[in-house]
Length: 161
Ligand code: THU
Image (cartoon, rainbow, N blue to C red; front, side, top):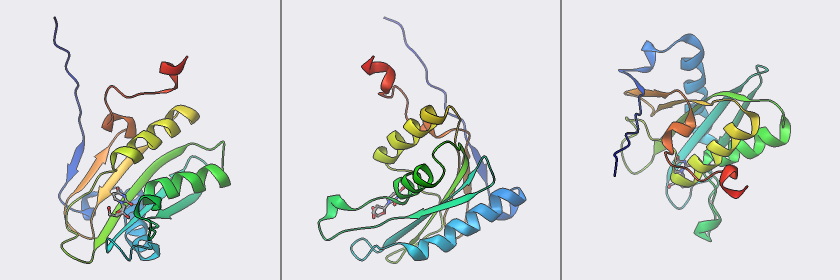
């Protein structure tokens, strides 16, 4: 037996004011895009905005459904949109924010397990890491160098070959 270690590093900023201009702009856009969410069941609006390699900006927000499992997270709405509009263009950075009608929106949230799997597939598909900028309406901001860091020992297309 031997033990393996998985190292995960991410950057923590005290507030949006400590970010680069580009990242701060993207996070502000993600905050705005929470208003496009359709979240009448959870009352938890999530917004995601990506800057693509060609400079284009694509956004997504969570879209819920009375049949709960049909609902989509903002990240997967964004990925489907980017893949449809710019299928060959890598995503450089995605900023994700949220507004919780039932509580505070003052700490970063990170993508759910299903979205982590989708983000990983997108990185592999376009052979390009996706940076994540995670922050609420206020408070600390996390920056993760590549989305796939959130999914150690992941299942990928390589396992199918
Ligand atoms: N949600 C997202 O859109 N992204 C996340 O990263 C976490 C959760 C959505 C799904 C659901 O509509 C609501 O937030 C509450 O879980």
